[in-house]
Image (cartoon, rainbow, N blue to C red; front, side):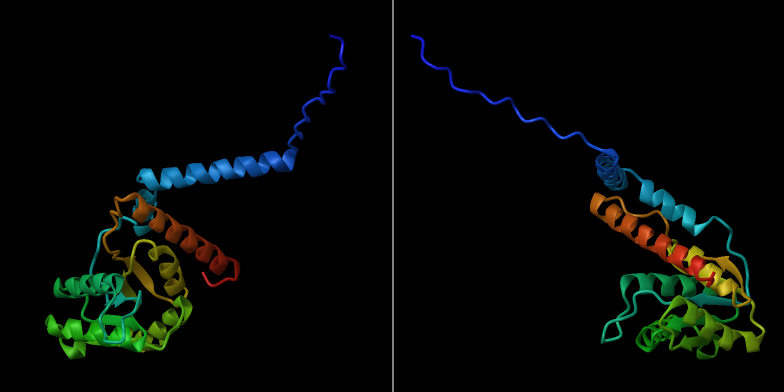
Length: 216
């Protein structure tokens, strides 16, 4: 039979990726690889430990526990604020400084002060720097509080992730800083590691911005 053959159109050509297309693909692959490494390896934990530093804790003029996380309406401290507070109290009870300083919002300071008094820190050994909303304002409040008392060398109690930027901001106010970071081993679950990795990225962006505008 010699019927007509149906016309068959050739398959459409795939558009060739340009430089921008390849760059987007490579960026996507790098992002996926970064997330996998961050979730299933101790990368974020290692960065966290590096940010904490490894200097030994030595006696100072004061122990400064900076704000972190605040407290709820009932004055109950968040986990991070509580961890910092307990470390500051421990350092004081070890005799590493004659005064213990809390900074932050009023409700956080009230919760910290109550806890410290309950654990045996005398009221006259507690100082508070109130009213700050940012790290820079916190450093300025601490300078107004401590400089007239001749306090210059301080033990800085902060989480490892916050220590580098907070240290530089306080040093610009004339303090000699010795870091006393909270536990720096970091989480072991993938979800928690990704959360820590995100916080590390945010902190690095904040560090870069403050460096750019001359705050550190």
